[in-house]
Length: 347
Image: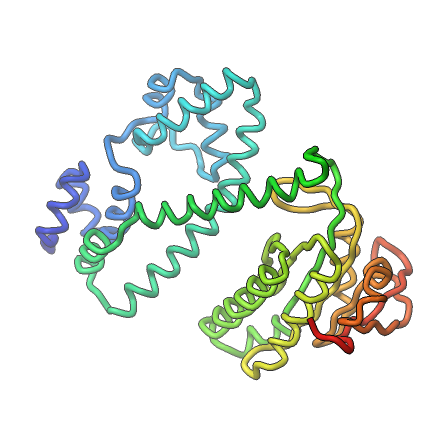
């Protein structure tokens, strides 16, 4: 059996890993996985029953939270660490104070959906960095152990989360400091034109580069005009803005940036404004449905807006609006729509 780098072995010993597990990981090709796992989740391993006893809780609650975080039940395996015990004990304490397990489980689902994407993105970066150096498994493990400060990575994510919580509270409670079930927003959808056929003509690396550039342009444009990206769905971005003028500027900027870059496909966009219902970081309601339908009738490189958006922008000389023929949208019916363009005064 191939010997493991002594330095890697010693570092793993310090993290509480036994020789037989190190050797098995090296033999089966998952030494780097073992390194990252033990750097992030150090300490002894417990079964689900051990965790229940240590956190003074019931198996059904442990399993329910574990599933909410996106993991299958592994009650018999020694999968859990001290961090799991501490987290579960915190849930039990909060439930005792507030009596609301359902809300905690719901928050766990929301967190896992967001954090799973963060984790995959971080892993993409790590893989590209390691592949660029063409390292052996031992060398890759040593680089991660010696050079990668995971506490700094997690600290950055915590900083971003703190900022996002402040921004979310400002948005949600900005009306006289009271929570509103529905709030007025402008909703926008932007998608890449012809992306499906393009993805069949270029390499997977080129597809990834196009999507990454699309997201970079979209996120920058949304942030510059005080909006918020709600979600990305492959070749589509959904965003919201407090004011229709900000949403119009976002859509035009994204479209113009794509049009000026020969390496990127054109985009199209749809905007609608009105009351929306916020829920778990997303938005719902007729306004969202209208915006999502409107984008489907937009042509390459154009932005189409609802009549409500047109009414708020008609006196704003940054924009020009041209009526297009009335369209019948699925599940909505006939609507009056307008094409949005730059006006006499640029922002």
